[in-house]
Length: 224
Length: 255
Image (cartoon, rainbow over the protein chains, first blue to last red):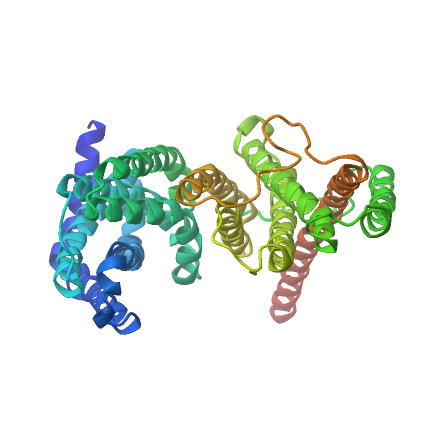
């Protein structure tokens, strides 16, 4: 089996689990939505602050929801010896990494669309620069998913994984948070030329950690 | 799960004992010289007054912090390369990361103390400050991971990989935050031309500080390494004692 077929197999498995259990749809998505709602309590909606800081709030909501999604992606391997089954399936660890990351990407992109619509409607944002918004979302999500999958497997076997994962992941994702927020701001301000360097930064981040993940996933996966 | 195989000889040291002692003594001497030069001999800064003396600690602490994290990265790579794999490198990586984290905290606190009189604020959202703060949390996470008990080889492997993940992130954080905002004073000693812009006694004091903190780092690394071997020796001994007790209890009940 070639790499792509293996990746598709693992990704389809994770997406099928989600389609049947609906944990992201029924729990993580509402969680993101309530975070978007809570920001309005923190920042008075009458003073027009919300629309100005909407990009940052959107990405914080996505980041928090992503932590849950990543935890979920490895929690499903915990029960019924699923991890051992996957390990014994004879797949290349790199394709397991890419497959799990791809499933996270698909789920997060769907989440971002819904949360994005909520932000636009609730915070009164004028949507502009669609190409930049799309490219930023894809690149940032790839970075989120690659680092998330890498740290997800690292923390998977640990007792303190729920608390350790955010501590490990959030500082590493600081550049993603920064780049995605600035790119969104530039796009909404109509300054798309300023946004592309940030998108490039996000792409570099995603490529770098996808490469590291493909190399490092194997040994971590064996230990988990 | 053969935990006992990797257990170190509790007497093993990173540096030969004589060299370690010499470094300890030199550290104390250099620190004493730094106190005398920094507080007495060096003149107060024309613009910043006595507050500038904090720089004699802040800059060397930042230098030693980079040194410590560089050593952590190097030791992690040496552990990951099969030909040089040894628990020595795991201990060096962990010890150095711990010292680096303390130095990062020291750099942040000293910078904040200096910033209050000179910039007028405890904290500014400046590129290098933000980068250092992120650096602090990156290595805090690494140490939290290291603190979780596991089979020594498993722990060493995931620590080494995490150290590399973190290390790769540092330039990206630095670069992105730099784009975002820059206000910090340009590096004075380690500027791109490596041409110090301060003169005379003040420059000398700063160099004494760099020397003192480098020695302090080496001394702490040596001691922390020895502590790590002692901890491993203790864990092994406790395991042996527990096995012996279990065996004794089993043979007792059988007879």
